[in-house]
Length: 360
Ligand code: F1P
Image 1 (cartoon, rainbow, N blue to C red):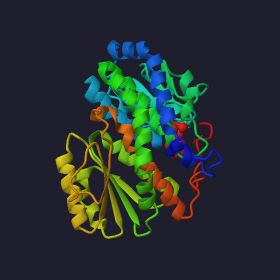
Image 2: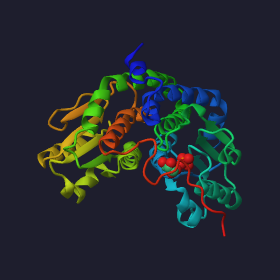
Image 3: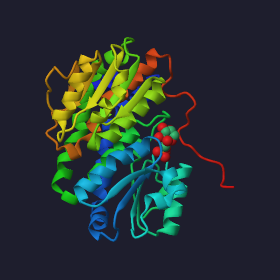
């Protein structure tokens, strides 16, 4: 019995912890779903009967869209833009250019969120382009509204906050994009085992930092492909623990927000391969201002920039390993919630799905 099973006795009182610790199972399922739809996905990428891609969702799945859109543009070489579903619904002309014929890429755990449903209906009526969706519920309305659906029931959760659903949907999106260059998709098959090993290796560190009462504010820094992830992990810290927490692009953090850094601050850096020299410079400066830094990176980084670090050593390209940034920082938010006396399964004021009243 490995440490993950030891850590997750089946009567565990918190769904959130069990769902975070067992998410690699949902990753496996996400890769299998994409493999099963390989042909349809490659036909869609090859069809090119669209001029650009609009990626949309709400809350966590809006931040997921922020992680997927830059990867679509980088990997497929086609303009892609993330936008909250409410913006697409209420201000479509500010999102979709008059001469464009976009593909709509919707992401929703439930497939029932009113804003995403209404935005998709409006898009189909007004623009008539193809719709692809990623979610966790096969019978959801959004699936019925889509031309291609990647559904991962193993991502379903009892907790209100998205943890394994988020990472499984992100992996499905990354794997589907990787299919455009077949080689990368096979390499991603190592992620479920890598994820389990990372949780085993750094669970105690996440618990130590999450439970450290010294910290009063949290900043999640991510640039390029990592900005959407930094935004989501910021949301997790807020939703679960009600802590003062924000997300920024690395170099933007100097342009004002660093005024908030002091000895009660934990600065979490989601390091890229592309720009890590610039990102490490920011982290060194925040340490000099009295902040404590936690760095997540593929390889070991100089301790001048990192009080604590989590190294993936995955051997995977930056475009294919985004899910590895998630589990330990979800755990950080979980343990913070515990010392803040919050109940992670039932966050303050939140429901799992936002369903709005019928349109007037
Ligand atoms: C989106 C969402 C969640 C948030 C809360 C309310 O749901 O905003 O991100 O944590 O649970 O709903 P979905 O459209 O992805 O189901």
